Length: 325
Ligand code: AVI
Image (cartoon, rainbow, N blue to C red; front, side, top):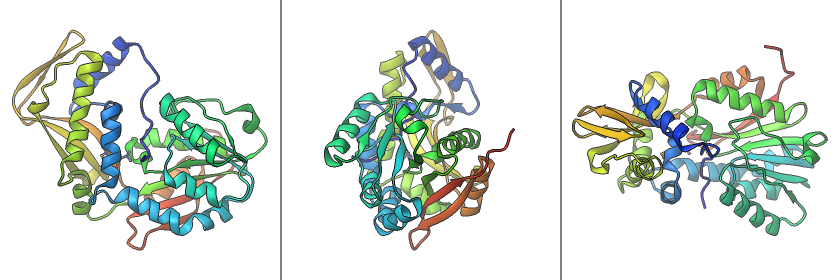
């Protein structure tokens, strides 16, 4: 199974969730959180996206791991605890674990309990020497590491999949700062980052010819109808992914096909013909741009591995001495 990004919020009271959705729909442009992609159907659709010919990200990152995991492991060093933000039964984590010298622990952190424990039991079975210690938490918020690894060992944060790209600059900065805290003083962060490239290739990756990304995008509305009692008409919206050069990101949009009014939680939201809901941002970085972002969180890029066409990168970051801010 592909890595599903773990951005589903901690269980919140339904009225709070509804309020957040209504607030997003009152913005201009209207926004929905990408957490709404990921119900059971959405997770299956995301797995299918990862296999699509146009969606080069997963395949390319995997090829980088296959070619360079041994070098990554050498640079990371022996006896580390790997803390993965999100969890996956995916090949990428296994490629890394296979190469690391005597890793002492694997700590997947994920709010999606079922997936977390599936991952943990699969890895515990296949890596009997490894202490597998799942943490059920939202990794975008502060969380406690198991006591056994919090103090003593060298800690490596693993965050593959270019999921960082789905966060705004300030959210990404906060997340990288949290990684810095975990890796400090002698650990590291190993992170997958998609790179800026020809917009045509980017737009194709998010507007696939089989229409799977369109189903994935529209599924957010189906999920909202079920969870917060909204009444979105799925036929009233069309998927479109657009490259926004000024923000260096792909914007996943749902474009209203007519003037319509949607009701949820007692609110009525008018949506004009042609108006769009922004459902996700997928930021793409240059190597320099990402190095700057990392530096703002006191992380220095120690090594970058890419494919030959420089489509995608896996980067090893080392923590600088923290400064007071
Ligand atoms: C999870 N994340 C890295 C994907 C991306 O490419 O930003 C989510 C996605 N959205 C549409 N296709 C894939």
